[in-house]
Length: 152
Image 1 (cartoon, rainbow, N blue to C red):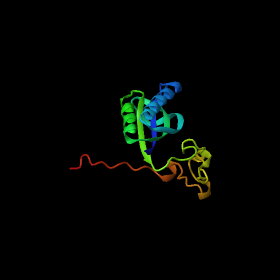
Image 2 (tube, one colour):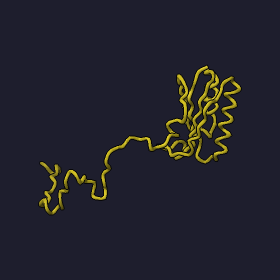
Image 3 (cartoon, helix red, strand yellow):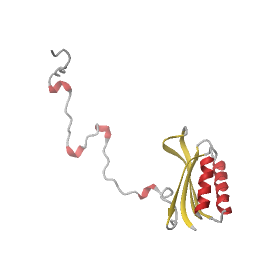
Image 4 (cartoon, helix red, strand yellow):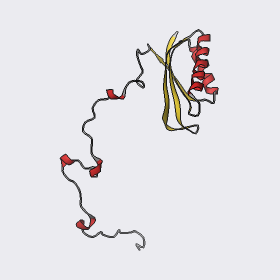
């Protein structure tokens, strides 16, 4: 049997209990086909980068699957028919990750990004000096634009 990571997005207007019921339904399909479901992570309700079927948010769920390819195809077929599932993706992996996925790890593990700019002073860096160009009056009068109309 092959190893897979499967992520699906459920509609935002479902309750968490309904999402859990969907998960149990698809787990049942996998187990009936002779497969096993390992780690399951509910990532919760998250904002989408763009609207999908009029939804701005979705419930994200990850499953580690150990099953034959036919079983995974059947799960994907059923998810494609379900109106509650917005998107899904299955990826074959060599081995399942141990511990929490990257989505469940703390955000404090990010590397330091250096000093932050203070935008209250107009976005100028204080250490590079003041690059303010001054008011428009200090630069002289504005020249009128030349137009190409009426050139004869």
